Length: 74
Picture 1 (cartoon, rainbow, N blue to C red):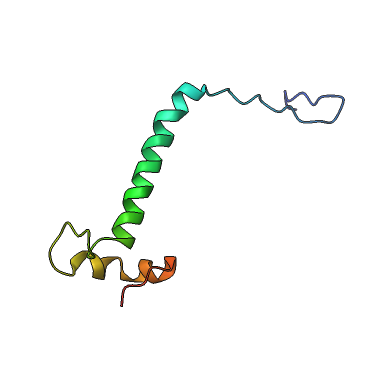
Picture 2 (picture 1 turned 180 degrees about the vertical axis):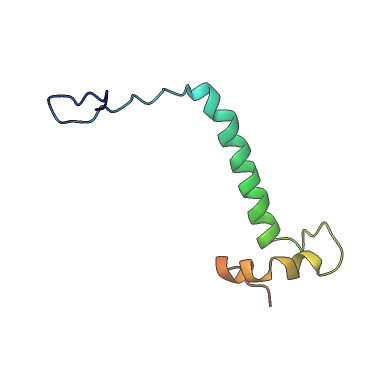
């Protein structure tokens, strides 16, 4: 029939998860945090007093996100 061996306890074998060293996680966590701060800055502050770009292009691109996150824009 088949060569599958079922343990007598009836419990399935659970593979162990590999340990990830904190030294490998920290740089990626810092990068993710900086990208998140950059995204929040573009949504909340761009086209205001700290504008980097002229015109309303960025404002219109993130307009709905501003309202979703509670930033006033008009």
